[in-house]
Amino acid sequence: MSFGGRLSVVLGLFVVAAGLAVWAVVGFMLPTTPTVDFTAAQPSGAPVDLTVQTVGTIGFGAHPTWVSYLVKNPSGQWVHSTVWKVPAHTRINLTIEQYDSGSPLRNQQWGLVAGTTGGVATLNGKPIALYDSNSGNGVGHTFSIPTLGISVPLVGIADDAKNPCSQAPCTTDFDHNVIKVSFVTPGPGEYPWQCYVPCGLGFLYGNGGPMSTLGYMGGFLDVTA
Image (tube, rainbow, N blue to C red; front, side, top):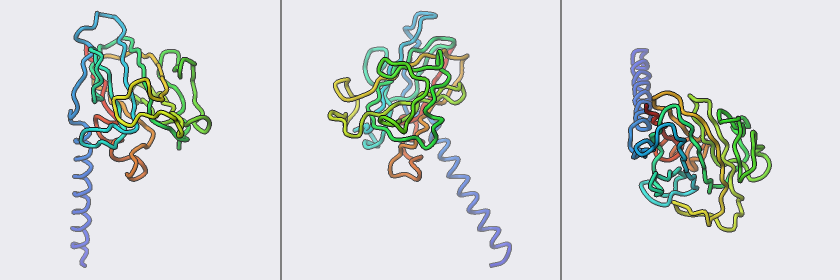
């Protein structure tokens, strides 16, 4: 093949790769999940109590076998959404009910609690600043907001848990851990958050599927004035 022919093939492959990359980014960014509003009935200056859960299997929807987050809306109902509207410059009291199992981290940095009030979290009522994922039940996921420097390891339940939850939303009757943190929102803006523990089983290096799909293991804090 001539040099011009080879160059055309290379350029063609580059265009295809670039197109796929753009498609993946746009697919992640598009608001395909409902926004849950925590500002409408919120008294000015009052803290927001935000409760979410992580589950090993969502059990419904387009991808019933995927891991996922859910959020409890202001009416107390569980919603399959990872886009949450919260007020600016406000304390967020975040409770995460973790129903998924865990494993040792590939990067132990993700066992560090960062960016929270006091630099700590509570795990089932006990304060932690760093979790050693090589001990205990490992870490199933993280809740991380990179632009705000926030990251919280979500310790998994035991692999041999006697009463695991198999379909969301899960109730507290099932085996789970409770992780609590607080942080203060910045000024208005869209702040992406995600899990940094590869948990997309069946995808290359665990980083596909739910890891890269809005509504499952990543979302946005929609911070408004």
